[in-house]
Amino acid sequence: MPDTIDRRYLGALKCVDRATGFHLTRAIKIEAQQARFYRNHSSLYVIQEAPGMEQYTRVFKPVPGEPAIGSVAVTVQLSDPLNQYLPRRLQINLPRDADPAHREHEDSLFNPVLVKLYAAPNANLMANWSTVRVSIIRSSDESDEEPVPGALLRVVKTEDDFVLSSGLSDQRGEALVIVPGVPITQFADEADGDDDDDEPAPVVISEIPARLEVSLPANPVWPVDPDELELNHSSNLVKSENLTLRTGRMEKRTIQLT
Image 1 (cartoon, rainbow, N blue to C red):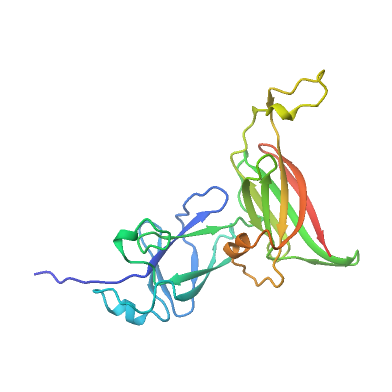
Image 2: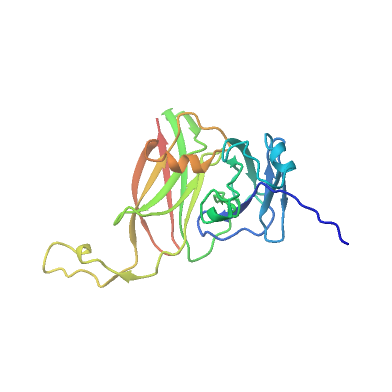
């Protein structure tokens, strides 16, 4: 009679590209103090062990009542061996909810934690992507300039304030925001023309008005946790500039903070 081997796992991480949402199936390096992961055949990073979860992993049934769901915070650092994505931090709240009736919930054990990786400035680009390359510096005068790492940059559609994409500045203050899916042409809104009745509004347009928003926490720690930056973007907003997006075109900006 074959032996039955039961193992309790604590959850899984699913790494995706922030700009495209594509699942990254190649290896990403994951580090966490006293925590263990393994990469399965679906390119999910399964959490085998974590500090504070020893009793939880030793008992299979019934599910232990302690620690409480989400009460143990584990900090994880991810990095890309190919340097196409910037390193980032992530906080995972364990244990995940193991109730099958709650499997549709975001904190369910049956759903992997979605981890968005942000493009490095040297990331490979597709010819039809719209991109924004930004240098962020802090200066008190022209002779004293310092790069600003750990800033969050959002590209927002002017028409409806929809966030098209976002990126991060690296330790050199350089950032790349990739905006895929900008149409070559699209039907223009009736309000896009001049107010002069003699100048009819264009039927189609090939550019999208947008704005670049830059936010920066008071004391950024590298690598940053972009989930936290995204959550606090509005309160940490330090700069905003208008720009125009077009398929296959790269916009370049230098943001100077004081």
